[in-house]
Image (tube, rainbow, N blue to C red):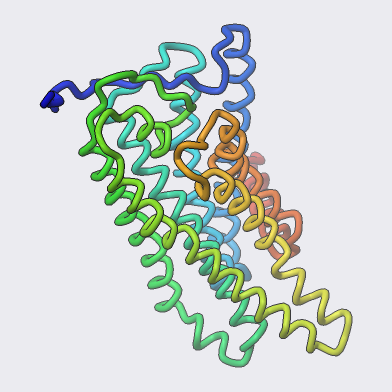
Length: 314
């Protein structure tokens, strides 16, 4: 019986990226550099506005500030590596690839959990407003954020360790612009049975559970809003949820398209959906929340006015 030499593990991978045509590299570099800068600036402004305005010191904006911080980290895990690949060699070390994958799953699932926590916050605010202050007290908010950050890291560590036990002894070319489980598992020349079982069981639970919590929260919110007698009251209740629902639709729509499918069907067509939840969602979140939220727009105007007054000579 032939024995696979377990020391023949590849030392680096080649990320093919979004396009192999040389003439596409500089335009793609400019496009994604612009998107990255917009993402960083937009989310930083959201964080600064929330922490500098006393009127925004509520649980909803507390969670939003952490979502913006996670989006900055999430995008930074993906885009800088893409920018390097557009202008230079497309190689990434084995350790670098697994590190990128770890943070993509950890931060992506942190986003998911924070969206579920924000849905629960809206549920309490609309369905149980008299107990909102006691239910969503500062101690509980901190615990919810801590849970939203810690569980995804454990989930990501599990899948990274399981991937690390695989042997890559054939091709080292990843048909993707980032290190992801599915394309990496396709390269393995050892059995991926355990990995696939864990992905379909534990992975599906971690992915779907926050979405089910969001769905349950909004069903209860919708029922409660229908009982409000005035049309103005209904509009006000829905306006506090509109931004969050838009973000959830963009984020989960693209994630479910990519990950709720068999490993064998994963192709290059999934790149666009991956870009939607790794880059596009993080870039659009500040605009979605600020354009539909009067309090946040006012906070941003105050922040800009304060910065302008500080910049003017006395």
